[in-house]
Length: 267
Image (cartoon, rainbow, N blue to C red):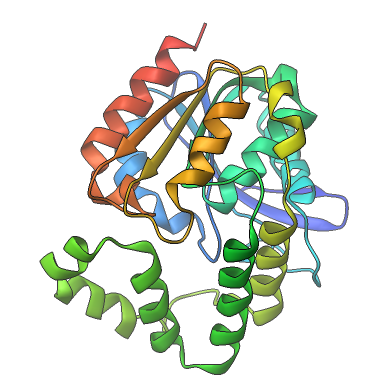
C-alpha cells in the first residue's frame, strides 16, 4: 500500500498491470475503489496508477480550500514516487479538471489526455449545483445524499433498469470504510467551482479525447463542447442516451475506445 507526500499532504496510490503508464484520477467524493470495471480492462494494456485525491479515502484530508492545481501537484508527486516520467492521464469530472491543470503545468509528462464529463470553467448554473451539493450533503443522512447524487449523475434509463443496485448503493452509503469528512468534500467542491482553464486551453499540447453523455445534467454537453473547441486537435465522443457516468453506463464502449486512443499515442 504505497504512500507518498506532496509537501505536508500524504497521498495513497496503487498500481496494477503492465505497459505504458496510465494515471487514473477520480472525481468528487470518490475514492479509487470505484475503478474495477475499468481497471480489469486497462491493466491488460497499461501500467495503471490510481491516485486517491486529497480529501478522501486513505489520503490526507487537510482543511479546505483545495485547488485543482494543488491536486495536479499531488498527481505529479505520485508519478515521481512511481518512477514514471510520462503517462496517459485520464480524469473523470473533477478528475478531468485536475487532469487539465496537470497537462498545463507538466506538458512534457503527458502522453495523452482523456477528459470525461468535465469542464474548463463553471458557469452560474454549474456553480449553483456545486453549492447545492455542499448544502445538501451537510444536512441529510448519507443514504439521502447518495440518492440526490444518483438523480444528478445517472441517466433515467439506468435508474429505471436497475433500481435494486441503486437502492443497495444508498443502503451501503453509511457503512463504507474511510468516510469522507465534510471539510474534505467541501474542499473538493471549492476546487471544482474555482477551476478555470478556459483562457489556456490552446496551450494543451497532448492528444486529447473528450467524452460526455448527451443526458448529462451535472456537467452538460456544452461544457465538453467548449473543451473540444478550445483544445487543439481534440476529439469529442458523445454517448447518446447516457449521462454524467456514461463511462459506467456504456462501459464496454468506453473501455474499448479510450484504450484504442491511448495505445495510438503510446509511442
